[in-house]
Length: 100
Image (cartoon, rainbow, N blue to C red; front, side, top):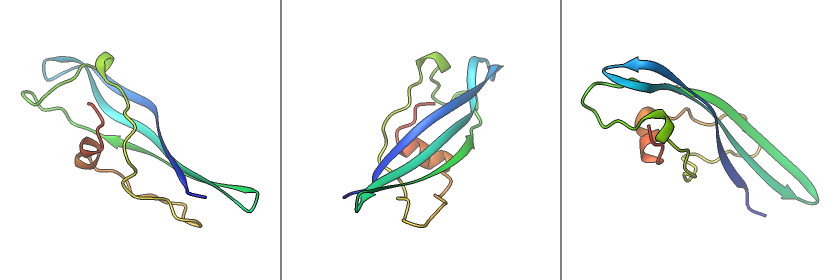
């Protein structure tokens, strides 16, 4: 059976005010997990991490309350026996559809 991947945004931290904007997200805490059933057994692996962001005045801005966590395609699949997934960069997070 195919491996099922899932992104979960566990928490987002925001500055009350930064660069003239309110509720500016500076850290996204995430979990990336994969699971598969094989031979009647369920196998699972997950990786947790946090990605920091820096807002610069004049860049596109979405207020904290208007953000949502999309269902992006996995950028690097978990492999059986692997306990690590690559840490996403700011650019990768944007390409994956995270709205910040």
